[in-house]
Amino acid sequence: MTSVSILGPGDEPFVLDLGAPAAPVRVPTTRRYLMCPPEHFTVEYAINPWMDPTQPISTELAMAQWTALKDAYERLGHKVEVIEPQPGLPDMVFAANSGTVIDGRVLGSRFRAEQRAAEADHFRRWFQTNGYHGVVMPERTNEAEGDFAWTGTLLLAGTGFRTDPAAHAEAQEVLGVPVVSLQLVDPRYYHLDVALVVLDDQSPNPLVAYYPDAFSAGSQQVLRRLFPDAVIATGTDAACLGLNAVSDGRHVLLPVEATDLAAQLTARGFEPVFVDISELRKSGGGPKCCTMELRG
Ligand code: ARG
Image (cartoon, rainbow, N blue to C red; front, side, top):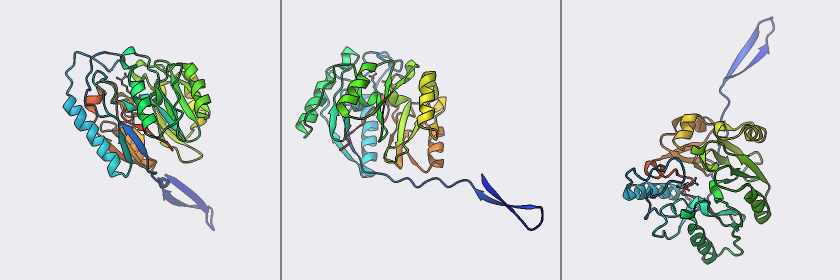
């Protein structure tokens, strides 16, 4: 509640109640995404704490949830490109892990887990046949947008579980953007994109939401300095992979269980768009994991 006191003619101030400060008007920008249908999706190995190869998986349900996500992007006016899924690569649906594209420059990926290694080359070929020249494949382990988040001015870069910290310097050189390293400390939040989401990447003061406990004490300080206005997510938001969200500057696609986060976003002028990703979450994934942004 905001109020102002105006001194009246007597001693009694006249208090004018202005109500809650108005949320800024959020303007979406049209995006281009690359996605991979979960045609071969299963959980047959465990490389993060969400994955249990003994639990039943419905590839059909995963496909329906993925299709609803893709439809939601298209309804919002975004362009979705689709890469051909490959048999034997059950995690290929998580396209965000296979490239970082900023201003048309592409840094490919190099997976930590042997089981996912071959995905990187399929995406490299997709880039090369779709007009991206000079794709650079990294020397260091780099799980792309899983650990890299572009704020419009800075590349936030996670490490601790997957991406090698030396890959941060490599990304800075290849992409020509300033990189800020952040240390992840909770194995459930093994990628940066399950701990932090960029909500506004068009303003000189970018806005993010994050779950502080996923980060080391020093990295929490860095985040507070860089983003004093950030949306602070709760443990409940994080535990449904609610931060694995995708924002176009106004609409934020996020898991249907992330209701606290959605309420905070609404109060800040964003429009939450709920999606059900229960089946993909069994692999530790959510909307953002399925979505690589093609910038420029
Ligand atoms: N099962 C996949 C893995 O552990 C999930 C990847 C999710 N992707 C993401 N961008 N967080 O590698």
